[in-house]
Image (cartoon, rainbow, N blue to C red; front, side, top):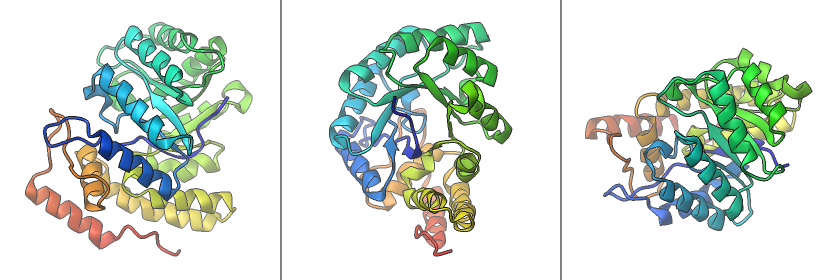
Length: 301
């Protein structure tokens, strides 16, 4: 089964000024990311505003990404939703239209116990072909529900196509615990961008990085330096990337990604779907001035 490796971008969802999905902008963003060298594109993740999209929009976004990517990189789609029924519908659609695999976030809002979470993941994984790869997705700071190493292993033992996890809480010891699942064969992808190098240096497979929408060059450079065995360069690049991450991430990160992409000439509008808000004129000016001072160019460290 295919798995996620290297730099994977949870692609932003370009929108028109009236908050409709801009599919032409999505196509351009796919091409831009592939040209920069990402290993995979991950539509309808948190960065893609999935919680504010309809099921039909999520399906059309995946279909647009697959058509544009045309096999150049892997496409794993985030299909998790708030009900098992909707998640299974999106999972089966992803397999039907040719995605390479899926990610499944925990349901959000209501607190669920481990039995409920296990049933949700296992039922979703068993709703698709046994050789169609599935990643669990834990982001407890947004979804309320967490995934423990014990839960992940129990799910993986019951559904053999659950091959890994994307974990977005900044907890390096837990990421390492996930790496020990299935005698070290469980694929681990980090969500916190500042842990990318630490994750791959510890045996993980890569990152799904929201910031790689805006500064893919940095993550590609870290990946390449690590693969060449130049750990000193990789370490310095990660430290430099962290400075930009601190500016781009944090409050209003979804609109900041889009504002950065507009600034780079990739998409036309930084519109986000309400109840997200736009940056004020003052916030946008300060943000872009800060980015320009820091420069997007990867330093020759």
